[in-house]
Length: 164
Image 1 (cartoon, helix red, strand yellow):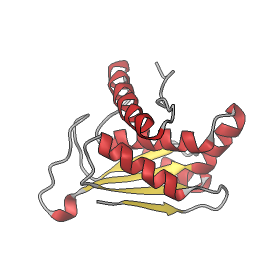
Image 2 (tube, rainbow, N blue to C red):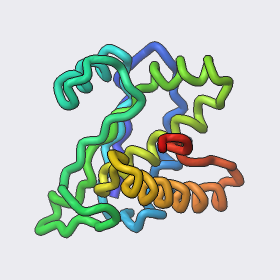
Image 3 (spheres, helix red, strand yellow):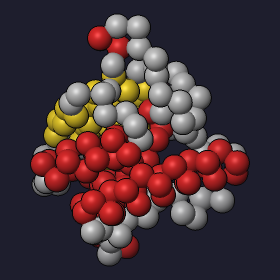
Image 4 (cartoon, rainbow, N blue to C red):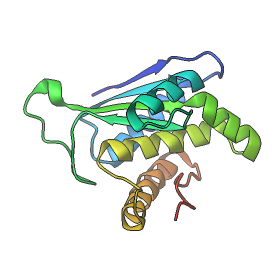
């Protein structure tokens, strides 16, 4: 199945091929290779608009995930037909992420990949509203990033390291 990647912003150059490859590997690490995923690289304006509409928080953010299926954390969807082999869409706030990276000195491409991993976990029902939920999501992010690190020689770590 595919990872459809669309760059819907022009403020920050995005290396699409490496990002797509990383998301494919992360999806495989989640056991979800047979599911499609949409990935949109978005501007601050789009992220602010979406965040306002769907989360009632009208400010830019790093990632928003829109699952196609509602599943419990860690469960794969059980599609009824071919058209339902879709995890959903991840909007990456690349302009926001780039600004954060400039402030912290972190590598933009690495943070983009880790943020996509975070978004994928949300598509599979993981949340971080409570400490137990956060711990479960952190463990899953660490697991799939470890697999990506093994394949690529990277040293990526989960986004939510200091949340609780």
